[in-house]
Length: 152
Image (cartoon, rainbow, N blue to C red; front, side, top):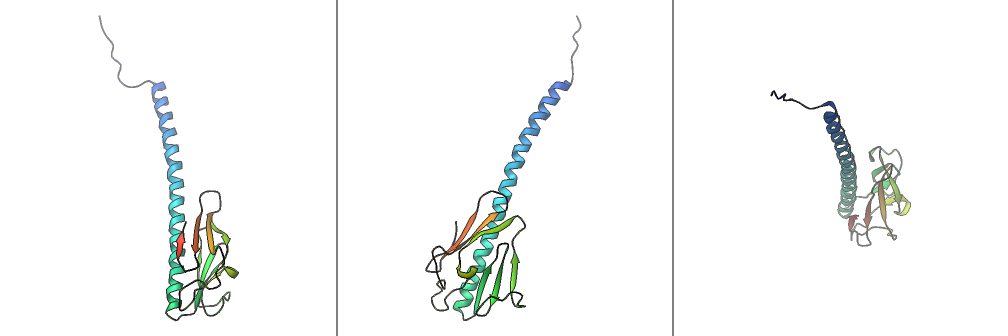
């Protein structure tokens, strides 16, 4: 009696395996995409916190500086008040998929006291909320009454 041995896979077996692989890869791709957005949100909120710390330190060292928050950007400025278009302004645009969904600083400006480092014109809450333009998690960068800057 002769036995015929088959080598390889049938078309149905290949299609089933390819279907399962495509499902697993699409699930993994979605997970990595949302993780990348969260990482970018963390990075931008850390940059904003660093900028707030910068003006706090510069103010206690005698510079007259502040930060103006708009919906899609923030602007480091020098002087007593924010003036749009001033050549000394340092404007930083948010990534196109992020906005400040809430800004509660008085007149959208963060300024610190030159002696104590406390937030000038503190109101409860004093924060900005960084949000993706389409759903997702948010980050709140807040300054408490003693000038402590936190990201939540």
